[in-house]
Structure formats: structure tokens, C-alpha cells
Amino acid sequence: MSDTSTNAVHIFERHRAEMRASKRAMNILALVIFLICLALSMWISNFTPERLANGVPRIFEYFQTILPGLQWDVLFEGRNEAGRATPGSLTYWYTDFWTYMSLIWETILMAITASLLGAFGAFVLSFPAAHNFAPARWLHWVSRRFLEICRGIPEILLALILVFMIGIGPLAGVMAIAIHTVGALGKLFAEVNENASSRPVEGIAATGGTWVQQMLYGVVPQVTPNFTSYALLRFEINVRASSIIGFVGAGGIGQELNRVISFYSDDRVLAVLILVVLTVTVIDLISERLRLGFIGRENFA
Amino acid sequence: MLKLDQLTRRFKDTVAVSDVTLDFPDGQMVGVIGRSGAGKSTLLRLLNRLLDPSEGQILFGDNDIARLKGRELRAWRSDCAMIFQQFNLVGRLDVLTNVMTGRLFEMPGWRAMAQVFTAEERALAIQALDRLGMAHTALQRAETLSGGQQQRVAIARALAQRPRILLADEPIASLDPLNAKIVMDSLRSINREDGITVVCNLHTLDTARDYCDRIIGMQAGRVVFDGTPAQLTAGMAREIYGAEAEEAFNESATSTSLASDPDAAAAPVRASA
Image (cartoon, rainbow over the protein chains, first blue to last red):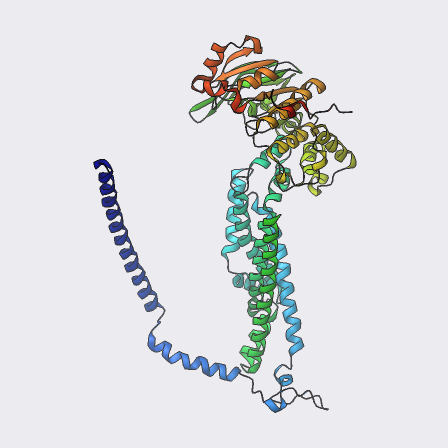
């Protein structure tokens, strides 16, 4: 071992010690800033331990009011001759079961329609919104800003406005979710496009293809698997969104959930909640399977 | 006849192609040589307007290529096919569709959008593939092929354009010697049999000597040599290549001469019917 190499070690160690010291200082500073922000937000939102301690029992109180009074001996009893359900039976608890189911079906259809519409809009806009493929800088700027506006407005707010514009019902909900989907999915699609290879695009350009043809033949085949995967992911999110959006009158199961909460606040709330959670979970599982299956197949092709 | 008149292209403060004046008579096979960065690729990309010239003219007949726009520009690109060092095929499309994209310019817009190809277009594409010995891969995805095979598909795509000029930008730089020979033989037979002008960028000297009627040497964006292979002396070549001379002369590294390889005799190109 020569002197010069031990010297190199010495210099490196000193450099490393300096780096670590400055990094530690940065970490402490970040921690202090974080704590200040936390304290501020707790103070502004009145988040105090007493309030939390007072509130927790009330959560359980509420749950008690929405729990069904099921009784084991009559649990599976159907309707009697007069067509009345026995209190304490499942039939009594889920009297409106088929109403709920048709609303859940409506919710799923809303999510599918909104996802398809949104994915189509996102697909079209993702090419001018990708900086490497945009045919003109102003078009790139316009499509980027448009996507930002679409995803910047919360779905529920859009739905509220659309309910005023086109009336209560699922159409307002579908439009609201579709617009938000265009913005959210369009950004993701554009980023996928930005990672696509430009070589095939150049190849198509050299044959005399138009810009649309360059996108269709050069880019689309490269990005289809990613687009599909993102669109399915967005569909999962949209199922959740469309079950909430009814709170402002935009159709689906959310409208019924809002109704039973504000009018009855009894076991019907829990009945609807259970169905919503089940639906979202089942859709998530199916869509995840599809997505993984699709990506997996692509990787082994 | 393709004429370049004082053609110049600048990138910010570097001049990639500087004041180039050249004539390309129809049916010639031209090799453009020079070290990397000499402006060979830029020159080719100016010819089909993948790049726009900063100054000067490109004349084909009475047409000023440098001023074409829109449909006329695309018509010129369709007439002036190009093959690339990295093949530039669409990997996830099948080979046949890749070749048929050579017909895009002639297709009505709705058929191109819907990706509907006619029986004639398919037949033309298969004939082009068959000419390069690649018809058996027609329904495979392009990305499943080897580099040499992909370059032959790329040549078939260029042929499907029924071009008047074929530009080849370092077509063999990413290939092994056997595939390099197959590709160069194909280009030469297209030049001889179809009378298509071929302008080919080459990095190695011996390939240019073996295949081209005429060699153009470039250095720092300028044309420093223009003549037959016989006129290109060793001293001249050394000047063109500068510091890279040894590499360019080292024929075993990237050359297409395969005298000792028995497979080399199997030329892949057949005359089209």
C-alpha cells in the first residue's frame, strides 16, 4: 500500500464526513419544518386530543343506530301472507334489496361509460400533449392546460354544476367523471407517449406518412399495453367515484345512500354501505386480475 | 437528376453540413464516407427533409425540394425512401404491416386510419419481402427478428414505396459481417435491377470501394472528395478519416468482405418477376 493510496482514502473519508454532517443538518431542518407545519395544521383544524376522546364514543353511538336488530330465530324468515317481513329477519333489513341492486348496476354502468368516454378523450389528447410528438408548440400548450383544468376540478364539484345544468340523474354523474378521467388519464397517457421510442415514428415519417399516421402506426402499437393498464386502473377509481357522486344528485347508489342517511339514519345505511364496499372490492379484484393478466401476457410475448 | 446547391445546415453554433454542391445522376450507387460527426447523416436527412436545410437548394427536376410542404413534402418522402441504422421498424406490428406502411402515402385517409389494406397492397408487400428472402416471417412481430432480418424488412418497406431514390443511413453499422454483406448485396441489386438511385452512408472504406460507383468523402460538413473508387488514394482516405483512419482501414472489424465464408456465396436477392 503506497502513501498516495492511503492519502486517497484519507481524503475520501474526510469528504464523506463533511457530506454526512451537512446531510444531518438538512434532515434536522426538514424535521423542524415538518413539526411546525403539523402543529399549525392541528391548531387551525382544532385537532385536540380532548375533542378526539369526546368524539370516539359518538362514532360507536352512531354505529349502534345503524346496526340492524337481527334476531337469530327469525333470521331467514320470509314474508308472511300479508306480504310483511318479520322485524329481525334479513328480509326485513334488506327490504329494498332489489332497489339497491339496480342502483349498484346503474353505478357500474356509469363508471364504465365515464371510463370509456374519458379514455377516448385522453387518448386523442395524449399525442399533442406529449412534448416529443406535439405537432406544434401552441397545440401542446393548449392540450396540456386543458388536461390540467379537466383534472383540477374535483368530480363532486363538476357533478354539482352539471346537475344544475342538465338536471338530476346519472347523465350528470357520467359527464363529471368522464371529464375528470380525460384530465387524469390524459396526463398518464401523455407520459407513456413521452417514453415511447421515436425511431418507428421516424420510419413512418420517412415513408411519407402524415402526423396522424405516424402516431397511429409508430406510437400506438408501442403504448397500447400501458394505456390499457392505466385505463383499467382508472375504471377501478371511477367505480368508487360513481358510488359517491350521487350525493349531489348525479345518479347511482350514492343518491340512495345520501337519502337513507339524511331521512332515516337507521339500519338501511349499513345495508347500503355493505353493498357498496362489496361492489368496489369485487370490481377491484376483477380489474386487478385483468390488468396483471394483460401486463404478464405482454412481458412473455 | 438530384442536384444540391450550396446546401447548409446549422445546429445552433455548429455547422453540420456546409455549402455542399453535388449532382446525383439517376441510377447511380453513391457511397458517402467520413468519420463520425462529418455530417453524413445530416446530409441524408436533408435529402428527404427529415431535417430542414438552413440555406441552399435541393433540386429534383424543376422541383425545389427544400421548399416543399404538406402533401407535396410527403409525396417526395414517398419517392425518396430511407433505411436507417437502427431499422426503425414498428416492433409490435407484424412484418407484413410494417412493409405495407410503405404504401401509406398512396392510401386514402380512411383506409390508413382503419388499417385496412387491399389484396394488391398485401401482394406488393409479400413480393418485396420475398425478394429479400423474408416472406416466411410475414406474420411475425418485427421485434422478434434479428438485426439483419429487421434491416431486410426495412428494405422491403422501402421497396413497397416504389421509390425513385433510396437513402441508406449507415445501413450495416449495427450488423455482423455476414448480414452486412446480405444487406449491401440487396442494395446493389436494387440499384442495378430497378435503376433506383442509391445514396448510402458508410463508415468503412472497403465496403464503399466494393459496392459503389462513386464515393463522396465528407469532413467537418464539407465535401472533400468526389470521384470513383479508383481515384480514392490511400493518402486521400487518410485525410478524410483523420484520427479514425486505422479503424476505417481495419477491414476485419466491420467489413463486408467475407472471402473465407462459404455462406457469403448465397446471395439473398432474387430478381422480381
